[in-house]
Length: 494
Image 1 (tube, rainbow, N blue to C red):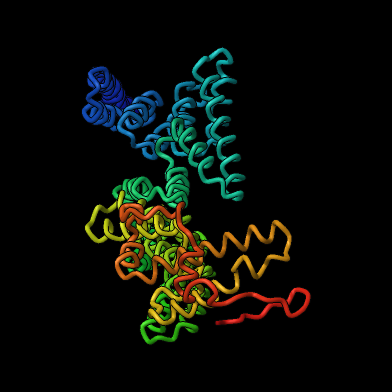
Image 2: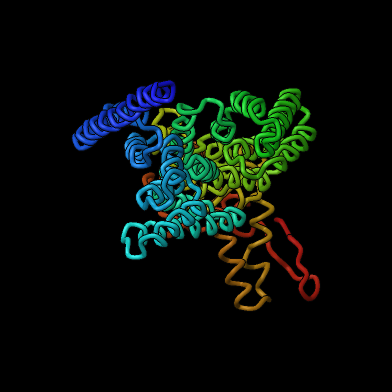
């Protein structure tokens, strides 16, 4: 009796457990079928809920984990999906779809090597599996893109790195590492909005991502928003104290800001030599910071113009616009230097560039002034012919004419070669033209303002320099050139 009771008890204890297990399996299958139905309708959230219920009922069923992994993948939750896929193959190492999903998750997260191992295992189980074959090729392609990008980054070929990362991200859309590398290279290429967008997307998912914080700071730093940039670098270093790039960028940003401010202070105080030295030191801090360096070159160009080193000033402004071809201030500074060095065609070119960008009255007037000076420069420079300043007095103009007319008079060079005589005759005529224009207030005004002298009815082609000479020196016989020896002459006045 006692034995029979024990058996009854045993039977009573085990039969309900077996019934519960079978019932759990049936209920789990029902949940799985419901999950499948929602998955087919692309309602992945509901599918996820039902697969989870199935797992709760039967936690050792590999296919349930595999189905939930597939659903999480469709929701873009690849890290969670990877955990489910790995659990599915732990429960059943012969589960081909489980290995495929594990590999796909690894690949989507950018771990191509681990992905290859998963796809290889799937191919071991089913060597004709077309999906496994293709995904294995994809994983190898990603590894190749990574390798090329690493080499090109060292070569500073940032365009090619962006290309490689774009290709890799087609297979690894959830890889933050690839996105950060792409964003960093976009920043190095000056494509700041694109770089900011990539970094911001990552920070929305993970606000503590030090790499994304660094890239945000890098964009601000390269856009010459140095104070804001430092804030991001500091935040990145809080998240990752050993972040080398953020540390270097933070140090450079602070150094640039300090040097630039010291240079500006020296300039305002009129200490141009010190300002030049400080701007030069600042330019040596970070050659990658294009916008800040463009401003530093322009600032140094302004210093050089104050020191009357106009060629150096032009070179600095040229370097500035090479770095930033939208930098209006650098074009204006260079144009003024061109004007000061009488390089009017270059000045007109720069003022045209400025006016096309900013059509202000001031820029229009600057362009007109340069065009007028260019027009005037193409005529004979009568001031230069007489050797006088543009502000020369009437007496200075007369004295200059007397000197130059006697110097180039044909009679003085009658014994020279035909070539020399012709050249001196030409100069004699030009001296007469210059005196005729500059000694007449009305003509001088028209000449100085750039107006055409032909409108005054003066045809310089019919000009007779001898008549001017005779009138100036008192008519025929007023003087003569006589030789006092070979090649020597003296003036004899009546």
